[in-house]
Length: 114
Length: 114
Image (cartoon, rainbow over all chains, first blue to last red; front, side, top):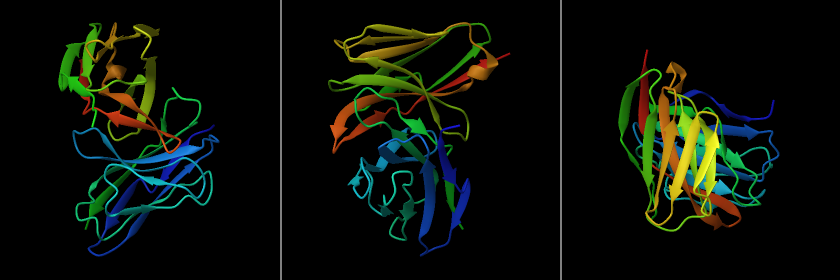
């Protein structure tokens, strides 16, 4: 079954610590995305990537970093510079081109502060 | 930035009744998409409607789009307990660096009472 796998499901961060959230897809999609969701809110775009070794900042990139070394993988690092990291993080992918395509989502990682 | 605003924020109905959710946005779009999110899970794509379409159906779902009013509605007919979830509209803000950028509303929390 094709899909997107996010791990871990729950993650705890200590003060001053960087943590990395994993996102893997086997849909052969070119584009991948990271979103942040706060309680009762919609999704806000953190970073996105169209192709391997290329990625762009979204609306709330400060305090986050990403890499795209493989088509299947798009890990997100929440750095110590992100002062309010507690949130639900969602990874998504899409075909990219042509347009008018849906995005497919993983089941998220919930990050909390210890 | 353009953003879908959803109305109502919460809706509670009896099983078997119809549920209607509305979404308004600010600028022209290429398409509008509706997603469902069960508690603690990722988003699931429901329907995509293009800017040149006025109505679209999928099973018990009916979506309308009025580009002159910059609004869309999602109708779920003959609701079931399993329809209990949050529903989000997302507007296609265009292709940026080869990736599709979606802007999400804050969602409508739908509760179906048995």
